[in-house]
Image 1: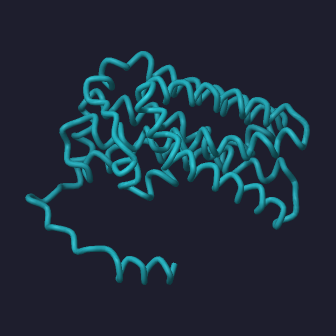
Image 2: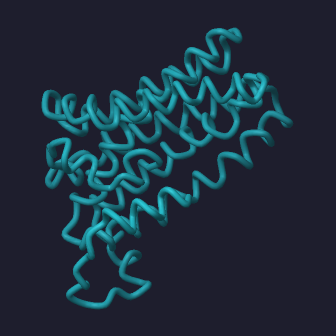
Length: 230
């Protein structure tokens, strides 16, 4: 945190003052835009899957802290590479919505194998999920910031207001679901939510397509927090 503070102090340029003040209700009003609301709802389902992997998988792996850390280090490297390098190239070739829908479906398959496979399969699928999560983070960020005419901070606030409810719910519900059923079912639920996120993209593609822009890597990395932690 200290290094982050020093980097911001030394390298971040002074930001211009907003043209007008933003009220606390502006992000909620921004969700009245069909495209932004669709992106937020799809991301809500996706975030449940994402945080099931992030918060619940370490208990399933049942490894020492150092070994578990190594697994998630590899996961994070893959997430970063696919966020910054791979996702923009896929978008330019196939389009944002096709890439997002396909990545969500592949993530669903990955978490199913993670939940039902052996220990080695669980490790491999945990690391591999970083690739799909990295792609999703980049595409969702671009959709949220570009799909409506709301200012970027307002659109981001409205989008995050919706999706983080699922991020908060997953670490609580995944262990509860295991208690009520067995260790496999939390991953089944996570797979279902990923598919639901893809379904929203398909059903609401017209609302999302109108403003979905195929942005280059410079734009994809503009919001570092959203790209890597989405």
